[in-house]
Image 1: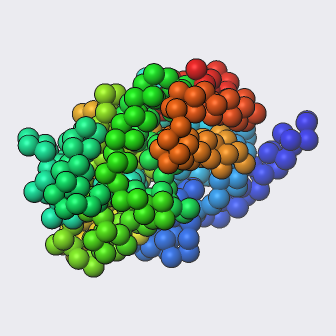
Image 2: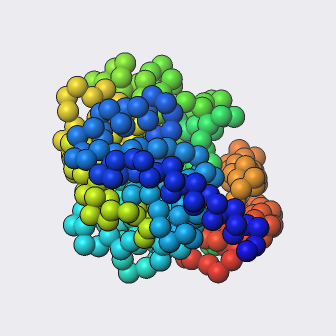
Length: 422
């Protein structure tokens, strides 16, 4: 027996032995999510306590999570009943190791998420479980300057630019805000919002004609952006101060504005471009390994987790938002209700086009992000030629992809091996 396989076999034996004394009715929920002690305890006491037979909720880092799963799969027998993980974790698995969940009768409100959960197959390999994302926010004073006929829940980038221009002209100040500071999440906007909306890709389409158009549009928006945005990292501060009337950021970085002055601000989905409404969801899902010891109990747990009341309890425990239609209780913080509504509209929009978190880059993740930051700084801040900048940075991006061998992720078309920079 090869050394690596021997280690896996030993791990499987230890796993099976450890689970032998557990109550047979309990389902082992093996998760990479809700790992902090407070969140894990809230999952056990507030979310899972009502499941008949009980649940053994065990969160772990990605490495141990995968090691135990692979050990059980190799042994052909296991104790894990339900897997909880991010989309990227499931995408790295062999779909044949997961149970087809088409017959469960539960799925997300977003057909986009349900399609992603098929992992390139014809069947649901996991069920979307919960989500987080980035959204837009605005001071209610800005609403009177919306372009005629514009729907704030279905804006286009052209309408956003016109809206920002109207405010700029009326107030004499550029009041669009963007987290372009040193600790701002600007790279996620380009990777998950701008590029998917204009190019239907991120890596393959990096230097395409569509990408040129995307950067031209962002230059237009930047003309109406508060120039101090290069120092902004958490947009809630600028919304509260009034320096910014419209902003983009992660939900957690907008929360203070909604919680402190809930009547002054409105949350809404990101705008759409020619290729759809690009947005970057952090999707967690639930799957059942083929080695689950009690298949019916595992399926029952997945269905239990998708109930609206369970989804609300999960939101309270983890700050991840529901993936099914829910009515948010009045006792939730204002920021949660506002962001949850915007995320639900964005993810279930007919033109939704998710740009997933980069995957498979390992230690090169920071270098990958740097490509987009450098491109922004050269094109938008330094005013350099768009095509020349994209050709220069394309070489850097290509080297990163080839060195890591990372395959493409949505919305780029799948690849065999490293995602090509076309």
